[in-house]
Image 1: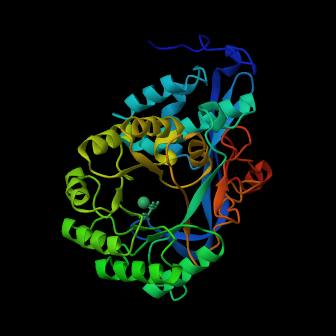
Image 2: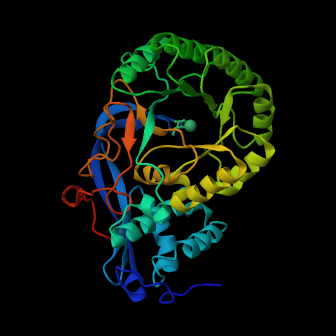
Image 3: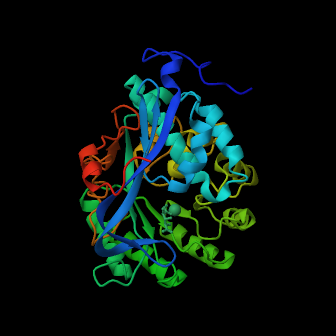
Length: 396
Ligand code: LLH
Ligand code: MG
């Protein structure tokens, strides 16, 4: 049954009519960055330049607003007609409509595009009620341990070009408070090499000592034999998990790998399908720990995956960082052992990557934790003066 706008629920913050969506708009703005993507899209340090972000704003008749960054402009055009006139709190109905729309609007409505709209709607509800999203979901914890997640390997002299460079960077991460670390090693165009991966993992293990949990996220297209060889070496180095060493479109390869290793295999990270794909991996035994990202599934898809994993007694590790991820981690009653903080590199600062926020969303505490944001909505304090000053267009 379709719930039409106006049939929704009144809240302490207003009547149903107040929460009818009246506009879905975006605004582009520039910001400085010293990161770039290589030919295959992996992030690395790069020359200082201006990059563009686009913020999505969903607004209602009564003046409620919700925001999400990194929106795909083409998505806004596709979803506007579906959203305007609907109740902003009908997230589940909207989410299901968007998921159906994906079939024919695939190019502009990937999982991450549905996720962006969903994040803005959760933000809107939280801001309207003056509550953080994790409280709307049901809070479980107020902090979560972080792991340092490195950028992928490179060939920069001051970068991540050698096993020794990884060891030195890992020691630095340990010194600034991280209690766990994940290496992303070399991927094309930098030359993936199982032996070099193992050397980097060994160098890091020797440098940080036996007690620091270590994880590896290597080249995502190794063969079965290469992945098994790598996994066996990681078992000897007492690694905590191995992530995405093969193409995730082949769950059979992951079943084959998981069957032969005691080491925990984490995934899938990159396959579309949100909780549906995760359910298939779980029933097939393709990984030991499942994985979902709020930027690919939204709060709604991530929480469905949380409950799926809870029902099967499977652990779940969140992919990527950001405000929405922290809200879900704050509401997860199952581990979710870690927050992925990164991607980090010796030559770039992580702490100034979101200059459009008044306050960084995920500062690291001295004991390696991240506090779950307590502000309303996703908890992002948006610097509207910054966005205004750097806008390259109006709201449209
Ligand atoms: O391939 C990459 O650049 C990284 O693996 C990236 O996708 C990163 O987000 C990741 O996998 N984190 O776990
Ligand atoms: Mg990964």
